[in-house]
Length: 248
Image 1 (tube, rainbow, N blue to C red):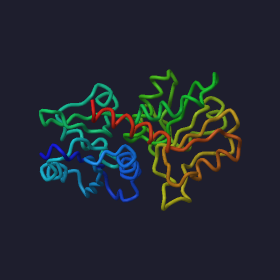
Image 2 (cartoon, rainbow, N blue to C red):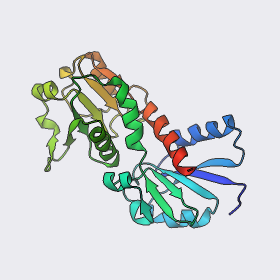
Image 3 (cartoon, rainbow, N blue to C red):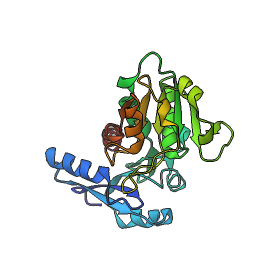
């Protein structure tokens, strides 16, 4: 390993659009961190992960995005307490002993981004989606002492189906969080199948998507008075947390 080189990167699938590469490359330029570089590692399959590690001896930190936040876990030596509880990893740190430790900074980014919007009546949330990101959001809501229910295409224990959402649901749940990829560029006309007409000014509509800046989910919610926020700030907060994890 060349001590003068510090390589960071992102693993995911079809990630040319990635926020992380642009964000960290700009951070390194602004901070005059000439020894640091950031690369996208597009993996068609998580089985390619060990080869990636073997072929990049200068790697000291990785971000993990869809669809590998859960499937990368068996390849790691250790998990932080939070990552183990969430069951998803979006940050990997290479320890001094060459071990790989997984962390989750998604929950932190989401929590920090949602907090300024919260008012006294925001006591319950609907989480649309059931993947790794949804688990991180649930963990953050636990920390904020906000009750939540998952919404899934297939109704399972502890979840409700989209067809069960009605005006009463909206009366009880004042935070609706989209953790699905519906509406992400290039399929920007898509949106979760919920009755948007029941949003009011008492509601928060939060979308983890940041590209496009305003998804159909946010547009439709805003039209009915909801306070809206996309996932950009969450990404910035989780990226800064990742940087701290890598350099601790």
